[in-house]
Amino acid sequence: MPKRATKRGEERTPLDRDCDVLICGASFAGLAVARELAGSGADVLVIDRYDIGERQTSACGIPTTWLHALGLQESLQQTFGELVIHSPHATVRYDLPWTFSTFDYRTLCGLLADQGDFEFETAKVDGRSGSTVHTDRGDIRAKLIVDGLGWRRVLSAGQNIQPPDALLSRGLEVHPFGSGHDLEVWIDRSYVPAGYGWSFPAGNELRIGVGSFDPRFHVREPTVRLANDLHADTVRYQGNWIPHALRDGTEDGIFFVGDSAGHCLPLTAEGIRTALYFGLACGRELRAVIDGRQTRAQALTRYHEFSASHAVPFRWMLRVQRLVPRVAPRVLGPSLRGMGNKRFVDWSFNHYLRIAHPDFAATGGLPARAASRAALAAA
Ligand SMILES: Cc1cc2nc3c(=O)[nH]c(=O)nc-3n(C[C@H](O)[C@H](O)[C@H](O)COP(=O)(O)OP(=O)(O)OC[C@H]3O[C@@H](n4cnc5c(N)ncnc54)[C@H](O)[C@@H]3O)c2cc1C
Image (cartoon, rainbow, N blue to C red; front, side, top):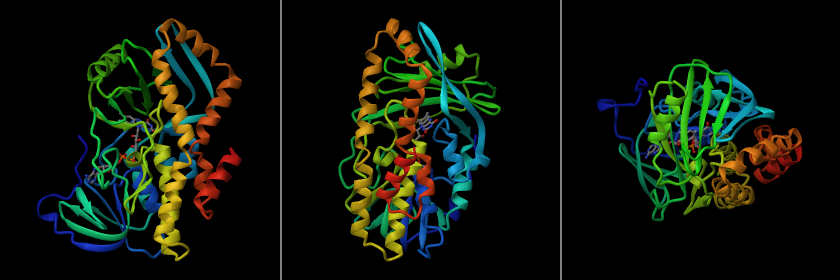
């Protein structure tokens, strides 16, 4: 069990106040926004129901260059140059054009938070009226409000569609002690009809799980079975819903970042680097408001358009997500082998990385749209 650092009992004093920027959610998305506001002089408040880094929300796999781009390499646990894909009739090894790494969630969040300059409070967000956010410790008012609260999109003004009807996948994993050399993925209907299983080694721990693109399909039993097949203990469970459709980046004056805006990529369910990427973009727009370079309305428009400008790759990935489960198992093996050609792997994985390229982290001074173009050109 993680040590709970969350404020409890008498420590939970009333929290009625105003601030310039209120960032709700202190995980990848929220902390990336906060990082871009460091030194701005704004009164920035970050809130989360848990302490920073307390609740791991994923298998914590990311293209290694993103860790370097943000100076987070101290959190790195293990690096992989290959991706091993198991299907019922074949196992293939893809030699990747860039490496993938696992990292320690608590360390990464701590490092990212250190790059920011904000006050932090633990509070549960219950909802919002206009520019007042209601929490279990009181109301907080701010001109600039960010929802980095994950798939629930808590600060939305509209009716939220709940699972299993929403466009969400579900994922569950166990974290047994153990070690491994390979980043492994299973595309196998015996585990999940539409989705995949994984084993991500991270130092002295394995992160073994199953994700289903169909929210009605329960993943606990196949997660246990995959762990058993790998002779690993079924301990330290963690799971969540994972969005697989882009949603509006702004709504009713609120900035949505990360899973709350559906920024997690369909097919791979990779949502960390995109949460960081869109978090940086949002933070830069907010920074321009604080510096007097644009109005709040302009920031809302620009961030909304920036997020929406990524719709094409997100739609393509959703198409492939829907296509893969329809491929007959006996065809899947030869197809995966055919796609293992080095030139094709390099081409496809470089395109994939370009959707949220790490160079974006270095283009801080540019307006979001120009920076995106610069990142695409550099890739
Ligand atoms: C099992 C699993 C494995 C995954 N593995 C990977 C992976 O290896 N690589 C990858 O790129 N992606 C992975 N993902 C997806 C990834 O975890 C998400 O896309 C990513 O965490 C999104 O970041 P975020 O900051 O938007 O939201 P989150 O990380 O979900 O953070 C939301 C924050 O808001 C807080 N919060 C929520 N509700 C409230 C509330 N009402 N009041 C106060 N605080 C609240 C939470 O405590 C949390 O800190 C995985 C997902 C799952 C479920």
